Length: 275
Image (cartoon, rainbow, N blue to C red; front, side, top):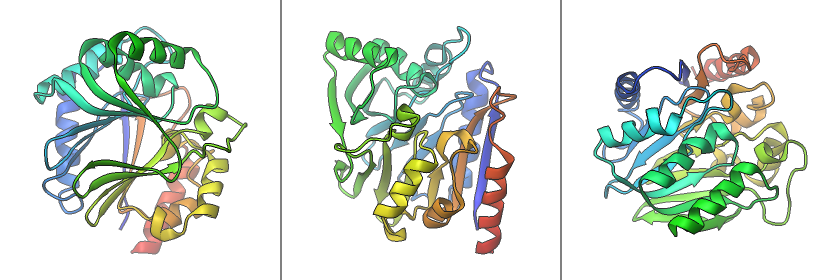
């Protein structure tokens, strides 16, 4: 059965709300995620951020949220306090799916404030102001950067690794390039898997469907692409992934009207098929 979690959270709420949301999610995953692997989907408002703690207590942060409009500092007010509340003072791996502000801005703040051992990014096809900021920070802070592409594997520790499914080094999507060439990676730990899709849209999903069979795409947890935008989460893609749990990160009353009803309907149809 598919369980769909929609986070319509006001990004100005305090860190205590984020803490209790994380507890709720952990209990929801109790029969899905292995007990010694912890995954937290962090309340960063209209954005994405996921924290993974491995059996050997290595920390992996995928995206960090951010504020595309206004001056509210997600990194300072939400993300860093969230980590410190858990006694996390440095990060082993940061994975940046792409450099839109609602995924990168919180990471940008962390890079200035705490030790980050390795930052992993996908092959870059387009420059941006945020990417230039990133390059400046990693140079000043001497942070190790690994650029990965489709077909590579990111080994974290025994039995814990990510398979990189997108982007290709030699092929990019020119339409809405930053979103469609976002890093797509699948976390694997024994019989558990979680697919992180950044902000890819239908065009990228079609390529993934043409390249990989359901055995590769199938995942117990899906971080739904692009905050539930109607341009993502096609029926064919959802059926191939066939998640037990799907999560959508959105801000309350966001200007994009995410998540779209069409996407929720597709999720509901998928759940009905699995009953």
